[in-house]
Amino acid sequence: MTDRALVVVRAGALTTVQDRGRPGHAHLGVPRSGALDGPAAALVNRLVGNPPDAAVLETTLNGCALRPRSTVTVAVGGAPCPVTVGGRPAAWGAPVVVPAGELLDVGTATAGVRGYVAVGGGVTVEPVLGSRATDLLSGLGPAPLTDGTVLPLGAPAGPPARVDGVPQPGPPAELVLRVTLGPRDDWFTGRAVRDLTTRAYRVSAASNRIGLRTEGPPLERARTGELPSEGMVLGAVQVPPDGRPVVFLADHPTTGGYPVIAVVRAADLPSAAQALPGTPVRFVPVRRR
Amino acid sequence: MRALPVGDDALLVEVASGQEAQAVHAELLRRRAEGSLTVREIVPAARTVLLDGLAEPARWAAELTGARVPEVPVRARELVTLPVRYDGPDLAAVAAHWRVPQREVARVHAGTEFTVAFCGFAPGFGYLTGLPERYHVPRRATPRTAVPPGAVALAGPYTGVYPRSSPGGWQLIGTTDAVLWDPARVPAALLEPGTRVRFVPVGDA
Image (cartoon, rainbow over all chains, first blue to last red; front, side, top):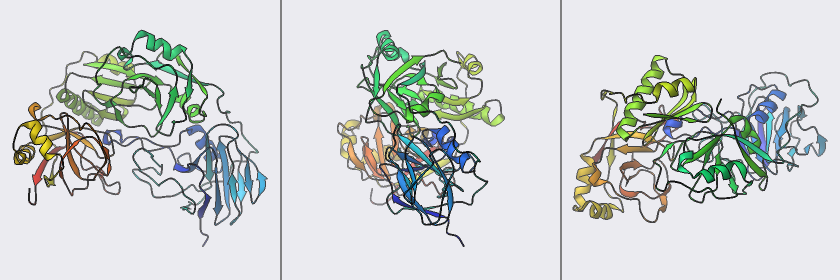
């Protein structure tokens, strides 16, 4: 019997198993989690013939290296990077066959932050509450990969896509985040709301899967005191006491006590996942649909 | 009742008290069960209930704004009993806040029926209400870097039990062996919003 498994030879800075997450459990304090750049994860799944909810690997900045125990089809997407199989250059953003025992190297991103590696059949670690995603806030799902980790693979569901390559959005030179104001914009001065939507912010190096942190003019509160804990949504722009807005990403806490001045459109969050520290950020107010 | 829009497909329903939030939460769960409310998440909290992934948010905002808080009859929700040893390192500090002898803390706490108002902070961590206001205590001035799993703790109006080891600033009054969170169990969380809870002293306490 073929041993459908993947050996992690080089785990990289932070490589996790991700899928579409575990929505529906927020009332128990369970974050939704899941791939930060959902469209990129869906695309690599499609390239190898996987269903959209198959689990993939999400890499951070410097990729990873993997050795399959049986011949597999893979696709690498998200942040552009060099890809090699057995030391020879291979395609990025297209289905690639990796023979049993050969080394797939997903290199350092030439732009962007998060790479996605889909393998035909998907990564089939044990699901937790219906998802295989690693949730870094609460520790649900498999631990981040370490060198030597062996990941089980499923049986391929369908044939790989017959394409040489597909267009994928490049990482943003400037991160434009459309926001609707509220629910707690009244906790801030008019000037703070103007600052948020007109002044320059930058992506902070302290950003992670929980939140995109920013550096820029601190937002001034109109009200002091504590906001009783309330439910938080994906894309919420929460303002902690230091006044620097934080955009909640997939592993965000389900409740929080700092006021949310605005909410980022869901369609703009995948590009937030690819914005390097230092990238300029603009919050652009839009009307609620 | 106010309904604040949150992004494009969520609403934050805000009321005046925790009790009202629990009533609104129960009513919204009822509407979802009967099929009139289509929503991905219903997340109760201290004074609010979040409806996230909501179909027709504008219609619901109009319907809920200014609506009266429903008078939800107290249904016989599940009662969970948690065995507890009142041996926490902050027992003396809590007794001092309450101005009672130390053993009185266990008597008052174990004599109270709690309700899980909401969950958050960590999977399976419930914010339990029920202690009268005179027994509310502040958080510790300096949070602990590691609170052991099963620690029974107080902060503000709430009692909580730490499902796993984590940093924490709550006042620790006891320990339970109950498993608050087990992803392999169905249901994973022992405590859900609305669950009634009693602490039962065991051992030397």
